[in-house]
Structures are given as structure tokens and as C-alpha cells.
Image (spheres, one colour):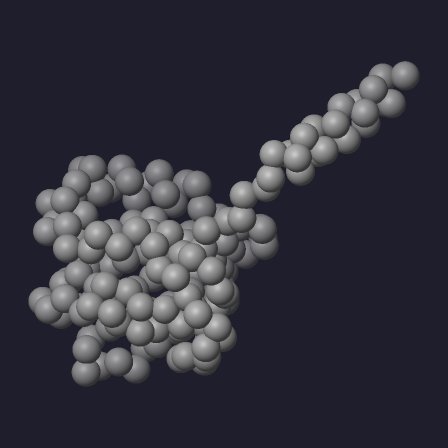
Length: 153
């Protein structure tokens, strides 16, 4: 039950999970039959400001440590969902909270990174968004406030 609630909360908060347009899926790798691993990118259809989601499935009962795969952008990717999480009755094998990528082409993607894949599980990663500095936020607030004052007058 906890898994279903978490998935529904995640789906409601991520535009890239709305399945209205099948062209939003891009394979990273669907040829690794030796390891029984699939990976793909799920992109938002209309909200380009939202981050891509990276799905990685391990269909074997063996964990795969340091599994190399391609990523569409550089930077850290944070773990969003893990079907092997102890909250869902899993083993909690994957303690990796983020994946760091390097600018090296891999699997037709411009960056590569390594993931520790739990057995018989799916991991979902999301590119960490850059946080705005405090001064940038203050400038935005001031600009909004001055706009509202001009409309009132």
C-alpha cells in the first residue's frame, strides 16, 4: 500500500509521468539482454522546465554494481523512486542517493554515470535542479512587487 501511495504522489507531481504522448519516451538502452537491464528517459510533454526522469530496470535476481549507462545531461541525478526500498518490503540494497555523471558519450548520450542496481527492481532518477541564489530570489520578488504597484496606480 505504501508503494502505491508513493507512486501516485510522484505521478501527480511530475508532468513527465503523464502518458498522454508516447513520443516523450527515449530509450537509453534496450539491447542489454545479457544482463536483462532496460533504461529509458521520460520527458515532460508541455513543461520543458521540468527535469527528465531516468528509469532503470534490473530484471535479474542479481544486483549490478557500478552499472554504466548514458545520461542526457551532466550533473547529479537524485534518486526519486526505488522499488527495492525497505519501506516497500525490499532489501534496501541501493543506498546510492545520487549519480554523478561525467561528460563522456555513452549509449548515444553525451554523459555517462554508474548506478548500483538492486535485484529485480526499478530505480527512477531525476536531474537535480540548480537552486537559485538568495540574491536572485530577492531580485525576482522585488520585480514582482514593483509590477504590482504599477498596475494598482
